[in-house]
Length: 322
Image (cartoon, rainbow, N blue to C red; front, side):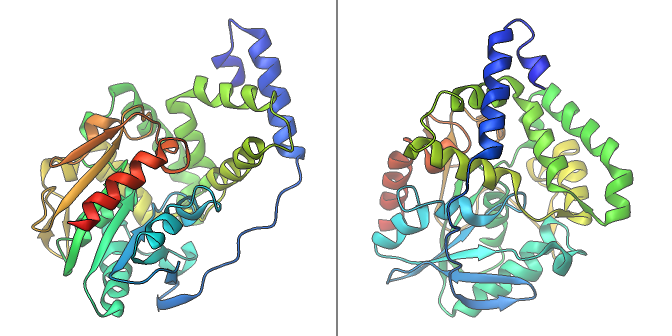
């Protein structure tokens, strides 16, 4: 990838490789303590992130760990929402082995809905990335107050053609090993998303090479990259639904995605808001659900933990106050 993205810039390649070496050799900080679970279903849990008031459930993607929504004290979305007067609960999907038979819709029906039911009172939902797609579905299957999606796809046919083709090739190449393992490894998924924008991937490591290793910026880079490269494998049924039913066939966008026999629509009966990352290469803005949208000038992850997070927090606070 470095060779491909820096073919005309050898200096960029050298900086990127130096940054990668520095990233691999930098000591890691202590991990954040695990929050207590207020409910468990199978291997999944609802973890308490504090706050008082009406419950608000954060639904992360299945593809990376939920930690992105509580990355550190400065950038934590969970902490910001708790400070705004909500009881914040973060879904932890748990080990892949405990949900090996579930597709994406099965995670909603078998895990998310019972977790919501365990709260007792209707909750608000905020879902990030694929978790937003799932939260929008859950809002049609359970009593909820409102639902917000963050950089979430719904119209998969609106991805650029080359991106869909690249992801299709990745799926074809990985089916043999994934079938033997019963899951799609995180390393394979991450390589696929890197391939959507290889130049940006290379440049971020080149930029890291120039940072003071003791700076907050360097520390956050390491924490973020560790998050992006960690996580449970994706259960094979979920991987198959994601790559075939979503990326290839666009069942959600066509109105043909069903959970428990009910067709999912992009306009639920409860208040909904879609926060769209305007510079997103992983979830293109055009793929967002229809309805009320706010476009934030940021990338897919930067909207959550970068400078743009202040606008995200403000937009969510206004939406939740209605």
